[in-house]
Amino acid sequence: MTIAELLRSATQANASSDSAALDAALLLAHVLNVDLSYFKAWPDRTLSDADQEHFNGLLQRRLEGEPVAFIIGRQGFWSLDLKVSPETLIPRPETELLVEKALELPLPEDASVLDLGTGSGAIALALATERPEWAVSAVDCMPGAVALARGNCQQCALSNVQVFQSHWFAQIPPQQFHLIVSNPPYIEEGDRHLFEGDVRFEPASALVSGPDGLEDLRVIVARSADYLTPQGWLLVEHGFQQGDAVRSLFKAAGFTTIDTLTDLNGRERVTLGCYTVAA
Ligand SMILES: C[S@@+](CC[C@H](N)C(=O)[O-])C[C@H]1O[C@@H](n2cnc3c(N)ncnc32)[C@H](O)[C@@H]1O
Image (cartoon, rainbow, N blue to C red; front, side, top):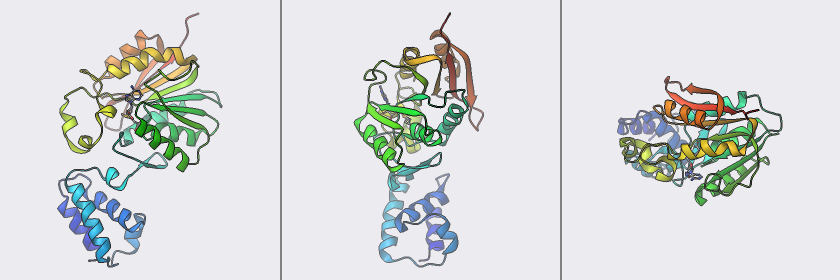
């Protein structure tokens, strides 16, 4: 079979996926160890039996619902190609909104930054890449996520990030950051989305946050003030129906300049506020 024929038949077989053609191309690129542009240049190349068999095995996993990122072990985020694992969330494009906003804030050149619940390290590493002079600390409670983020940090050759294990602020020595960012778990226990699509393969530790989805956000927003400089910023991602609740949490914790940003679908996604110490 040629590359073009294999991609066509795999796309048809996986027609229930919204991204069937891209899924097939990513899986084949992984098997052949090439990038996607290769398929435009060599559509008529015939595949070896071994490559075809390898591809069929991966396609079968995709047809059973496993996310492409877990099958190939990688996901693009910002400008980075990150390793991913079933120990934590696959970084989502929506989270790039939080990175974009963080980079626009009025922060010192040598800002100190904390990423809570770093997972693969996506947010921390994107910020550290864009601002080499920032000092970024990144924590996660799951040892597997800490190891993954450390590996990604090494692969990106970043020397301005340190990753360590902490249950939110519990293992973070007292200090003040100019910016705290977090994409914490925020789905309600039992939410039907947990049983659909890619999310079924991701761990509850990265997704679920109590009966109303706000348990972790409550802790993060309430405790952040103790770890922020005066005029420091907190940015959090949350569910699209949690905007009102999250703004109330920011207000109750003494934040000002509170704002919520919407994603490309017009849904509330990221809330931020500035910690202004009363005179
Ligand atoms: C929604 S995932 C976000 C991962 C990554 N920041 C991203 O945007 O792709 C939430 C992360 O928070 C971590 N987490 C959950 N509870 C935590 C806690 N109590 N302390 C620290 N990290 C926690 C999970 O292990 C997971 O990696």
